[in-house]
Image (tube, rainbow, N blue to C red; front, side, top):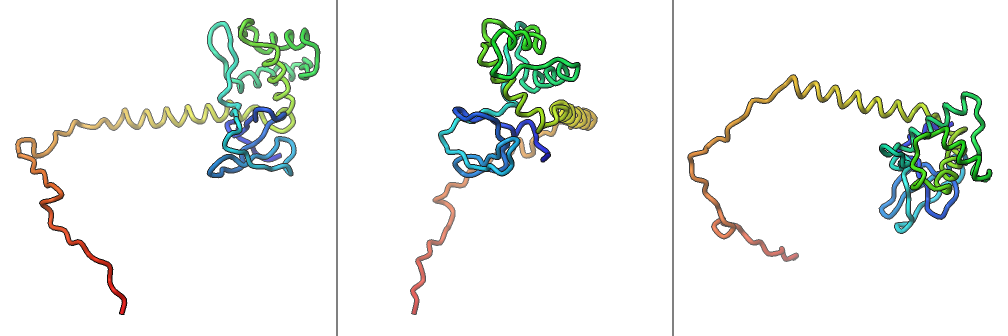
Length: 187
């Protein structure tokens, strides 16, 4: 299993499945299908690409990142719950989604969103380690805390600008002597 980063997993509008970004082109991305490393292709400039790390689900309080929803679904599955596929009936999908994200906004989260989330979860389940999602976030938080401590320890003294009382002389382009050279003639 190739090491994938969650922020490089994308979904293409109009294409089923998930893809991993393996490169960039000037007018698109180079993608590899999750679970099928032999299928690689390039996107066009007009294709809509959604990064899973940027997607969030609506709740009554605040939005919850899709990565956190995946972690909750994985924890529920590890407890022995069977998560529905996107092809199961709506009632079982809503019930399972209510267990994964209990305070989801029932007016703004549609059954199609739930089906898509469960479909993506099952695609990633055998091909991705969900523990990486929090590990990377914690690593970034530790990095920001360490740089924050460094900046607070080394407080910079305010520096007064030099030559405050001197007049500044502006040199215009015309006052500079410049040579204009003509191209050399070949003999």
